[in-house]
Image 1 (cartoon, rainbow, N blue to C red):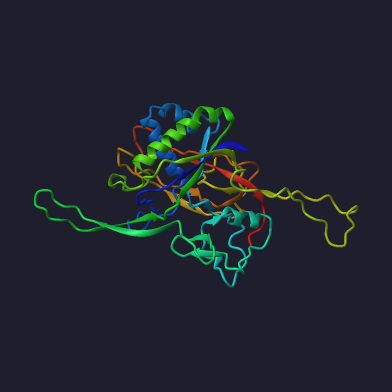
Image 2 (cartoon, rainbow, N blue to C red):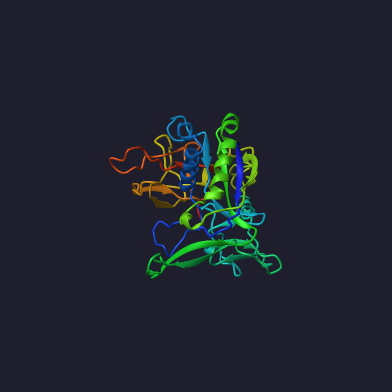
Length: 354
């Protein structure tokens, strides 16, 4: 397990997380790991650590010293995550439409990893249709982490007072006690000693200046971040003990062939761009792909599109996933621009999708 920090952000203003479509009438619910890395990198630049940071994470050639998960929702003490795609959704239920949930509590994932049935007879779970979160229902009461709303604005001429055409922009408005969480994992204890305080400083700066879109309007800001040190992934999810295949029924144990070890798969908590050394079996697994692009801060130029493997994907590979940070700067741009695709993944036993 790696040394890590669990970061909890409690938004105080609306947040806008631009969707892949670019539509202003839509917003995403997860702040992706590549965007988080970009934001932290700009904060490192503002604090005077840019060159050293890039050498430690993007250009060093020995794997990144720091990896980020994406930012997922939480409500009070319940952290939600994109569940493993090979285990979700569970068998249909008469009470809960599991397939409608994109983010679920860790306790649900642990139940599925133990190959136990997810119980719903007592009405203990509800899927919030708008946030697509599976939320514990306590005595029939539940609260979603956020709502999607649309804010309307119009520019007003300072001289004439005439307003322009109104513009609608979608955003997230968070409930009290709710917000977004992420994990910052370090490659070693030495890397933690070097970078933990600097990363925390960057998150404090970003909480004040904002994350996501419409920051000039004050959006994307948070209360002081909460930092919880630990070991990844032990603080968040309890993994089942390694299992092996059982002898066929009726075959004496002493004459049965040696059990084959269960295959290990890798459950992604971040976006992932495969490195040449990543021996992924793309014919198997359960994964999704997403196209990513964006505008370069202070320049306005649009980066090249790249396809990344999405959060919640489960990949089969010859070893732990590494990932890469490809240069997505447009042609003839004066400096490289890195799209962070380094994997933050949890090894889990492989099961064939239902």
